[in-house]
Length: 433
Ligand code: CMC
Image 1 (tube, rainbow, N blue to C red):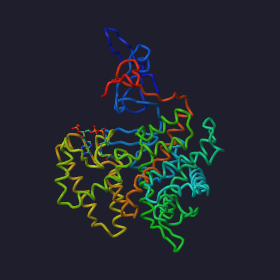
Image 2 (image 1 turned 45 degrees about the vertical axis):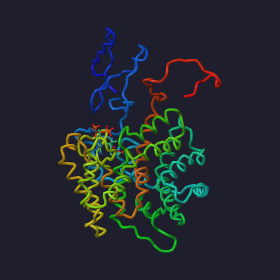
Image 3 (image 1 turned 90 degrees about the vertical axis):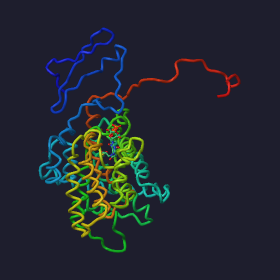
Image 4 (image 1 turned 60 degrees about the vertical axis):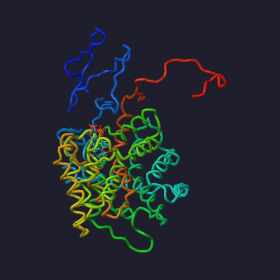
């Protein structure tokens, strides 16, 4: 954070002028430090944190108007094209791209942590077979803190490093276990000879009865989906991880909180909601009816996979996702896919329709990811779990960034509208409501 050359903002309240310091980041708009307002008897009001920076960060930068996403300065398009998920995880955690030795060492370390404690198998049995896998993930990831007492000292950098590696490595294993559990199939152990995304597909789809060959195109698509979800600065789930972390809670508990926040359809649950929406629309001939519903302010229906709090332009991840979608469908020989046809038609309408253009509602990352995941054979209820796997390095990088620097307990204030002070009325003296 840099002082903006002594620049200050002036706020006049009740004829008093208050000077507020301004700071400049390396990219993005300047910020006004409102921290001293409370000592003067005021709070700021910003529901949804639309104009509030809650922290300093060096990890990810988004310019929503220009459709730009940079991780540690590198554009997402270049990372998607030339890098891979684990390399990006390394970059997010460490700030720089690894050299060849560092990368090989990191990949090897993650492989060594992919197995989970055997006792965890019994935790799964406590869930109904039809439990949503996100419900299972909230539980089992939080429960990891009961298994790894050796690395829970958040003030120890080595403990934090080990925990980061454990979480990145174990999330795919736990995710695949939650799927296998719902199918009543035996859990499949990770294989150290496979690449991270390949290993996940193997744990999802292999059975002990026959050999399962992972298609390289599908593994590459899976890796890209993880990569495209790896971080997105202070989104709802990452902010949840930071807020939970600011209390000193252990990292497994914080990531479990992030998973819970991700679950909602306005955030990570949107990829599942997109497919459910395409199912609901059912046929291209019904699209106009649903677009009309989406435009009706009195109708709660929204076009899932469109719009974003920060992007008021095409989400750069959606462009890469669209290309990956074509590659996957071609590999599978299902290019003439009815869902893809509906999606393309919806996209075209939304990009041309005055309502969507005016409100700057563009397709977001979740719009195409669901179609790819379905084509790969991933069941719809696993979509948000896949997002959670991808987002894990981002969550940990932000948690670690916060814990390694000076930080304060996160404690938002409020504009209170409830009753003013009144005296307690004993039960027998209360009049009926
Ligand atoms: N379909 C129809 N209208 C929409 C949509 C949509 N998908 N999204 C926003 N609007 C309208 C909304 O009704 C409002 O209209 P008005 O100005 O007349 O009240 C206006 O656009 C602004 O919407 P908002 O909800 O105030 O904007 P927001 O920044 O709070 O919400 C959003 C962003 C992502 C929650 C919202 O666009 C949405 O619900 N989209 C569908 C869900 C979705 O795809 N979510 C995934 C986000 S990307 C994945 C991730 O990063 O987590």
